[in-house]
Amino acid sequence: MNIYTLPYDLAEHIIELSLSIHPIPSSIARVSSTWAEIALPLLHERIHLTSLDRLRLFATHSRSKSNSGADVDGEHVRPLRCSARGREVEIRLPGGTPSHGMWAMIQRALARCQYDARALASNCKTRCCRGVRELRLCLHSHMNDPNLSLVYPALSQINPQVFTWKGPDPEHHFSTAIISTAANALCKAMHHWSALQSLHLANISFLHDGEELPDAYPPSPSPGLIQLTISQAVFMLPGSVLSIVLHSRALRSCRLVDVYQHSIWGPRLRLGDVEKLVGDCERGDGAGHDCGEGRGDMARGMRVEDLKRVRRVLRCVARTERLMGGDRELP
Image 1: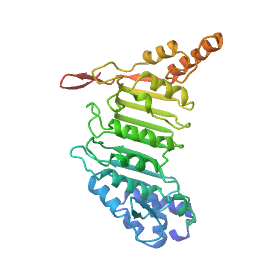
Image 2: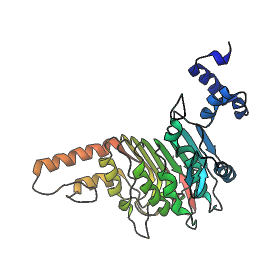
Image 3: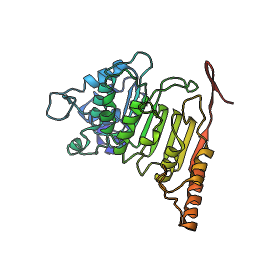
Image 4: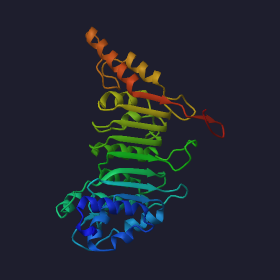
């Protein structure tokens, strides 16, 4: 049977399987314009950039002189093909010497995947665009990077359902990949993420301007957030955790792994710390809950329900033990 006579959905399925096993997937798109029309959107659904060179190549080749596109940082950006299911984008960069142009490249790369979804949808007969559905970052942010101010514009232009940011170091090695300046910009960008359902942050510091102020910008997940995981975090106080658990009503799981209230030499954040905050709360505290006097049984009933929700949703886990000179994974 000629593939050109097959229903579109069946031909798409065949080409999708071919792309997954072909040693040079782009060769399939070169067979004919019909195959390219089917293959390119599938090929562009999963973007994996695993080095600075690949990120730079993807970003610099996104420049276009055509009228279709958008301006990012003064340069014209050419889009990818439409993707009905949304794109999975992974940017995995090794540690070491920072590249001061990294966030400018990330901004252009995400713009290429995201910015003109509505414009392209009008020209696409068989599918509509959804932009970046899932973004996974595995990279360090650096204090001496002059372009850290681009973290917010780079991340606020997308609206992912799934977001992960962790460091490239081994999991048993406690390090800070998301410094406080980047954490602040990230939390501000998350205010725009109405579609967010799953959030995983690792190797993060919430210290701000030399003060322990995580309550100033705790993760502000969307109302639809279902799963939250924070691992290897420092300077995260119980009030921030309680605020997230109580205000994110769709949240089913909040998992904290090796999270410390202050530095890594201070106390871990434990379930009992958050439970105690519920029991001791007074109206107008950091949890944003009204526990004032004079409301009797109603106030007590609210505290009981809050305590039940904390115990149902929150899990605090100790995975590694901090030792002088290194880390040890707990049995």
